[in-house]
Length: 231
Image 1 (cartoon, rainbow, N blue to C red):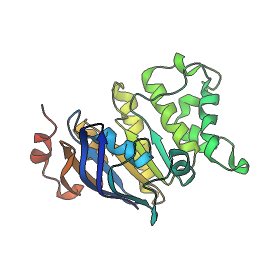
Image 2: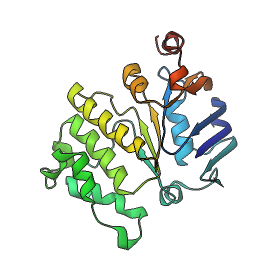
Image 3: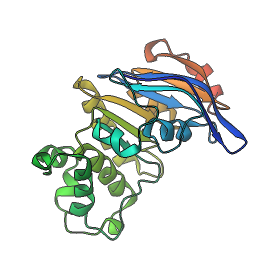
């Protein structure tokens, strides 16, 4: 389980996260929702060690990782799919996938066939440059690159942003499959409500740097959640 307890984060004088508490359990998809600018990406940055927190604690599988650098979190099985994908445009699809080897022991540095079972389009594009792929294909590549690291916690930041509907369905299928296996916790930031609602086992809603609603998805009051998503 990932647990964030009373997490605070500052950018200079700006108090971005204000006592955030959040959990993400293995075998469950936790969806974090909220308007732009409320702190969702900042919270993911704190989970990944990309932004040092000002207070509070982050634990993963029972260990305090609050002060661990990002690469050590990756070695502990935490993988990140950033907003905007951030693939390497001049590297081939294969080379992009192989960047995931960095946090693995040498014996595990191979591309599992499952990657291409989940994203068949990538098998035929291994020698194409990442920058030549469509936005949807790049998003599939970014998720596949994260899966190469064999994560036990998969963190995704708005994977549907700017993606065509057919590929959104493919990404939804993959996330649902990964969550159903029971060996991976998935933390998903999403503004597309229907996508989040259909995938979530648990949900949390942020507003102004705080969690204002949270619970099991089956108990979600849709109208109340939507109030915090509309401008």
